[in-house]
Image: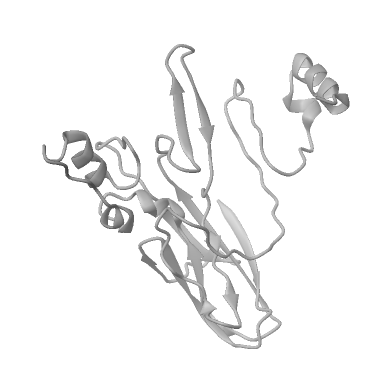
Length: 212
């Protein structure tokens, strides 16, 4: 769940806001599946190649699972639902009143999604020998698309390749995981004393003074 405060620093009145829904790249019938290229040799296309094309961008997505965002709520600061439209990897939220320059708008989004097997910059990798998995969670929250003085809203679809424009912002993030998980993230952790074991604290202290 997220709460976003969007500031209209442009000279224009804005009637809607665009968000990026990167996880929708993995929807079975989404733009990711339609934009994937395949190869056919003289022996024809293999079963795995057909599965990969049908499953979209993941290399081995579980056909029994639904991937991509499940948006459960879009609401304003008072909790009133906001109208929205999802277009593949983008979502437009219509504002109740146009935003004038210099004003801000607060809204919230609730969502969930199934984690894919590792692809590109996100997903999980299972280590059978150890019986555990490494999760690398990227492109995981609906995020604001940029509005600039050249193109207005940047709302091109995410195809899983190349880079894309983003806007700067201040983020406050809370992550809850099972007690036996080890979490690493960008930024500065505020509660090492509560979340690290004594052994991990010793390793961290040693790493802070290490020159190798």
